[in-house]
Image (cartoon, rainbow, N blue to C red; front, side, top):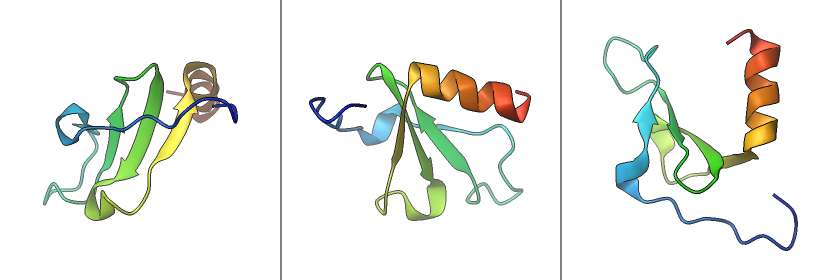
Amino acid sequence: MNATTRRPTFSDDGWVRSSRCGPSGNNCVELNGNHGVVGVRDSKSAGAGILIFDRREWAAFLAHTGH
């Protein structure tokens, strides 16, 4: 996101947990793609911080990790 773009507010109901969560279900990465960007957070500390990627950045990240 560039400096002129406002940071989106992600609602709690838009988050999707990774299919690779730990057995207890609370050791997960969660994604939210409802704002034209992708928000990424840790399920254990959902309010602590969100990484935000634009779609191009997210695609590059996935390509680099082989997913």
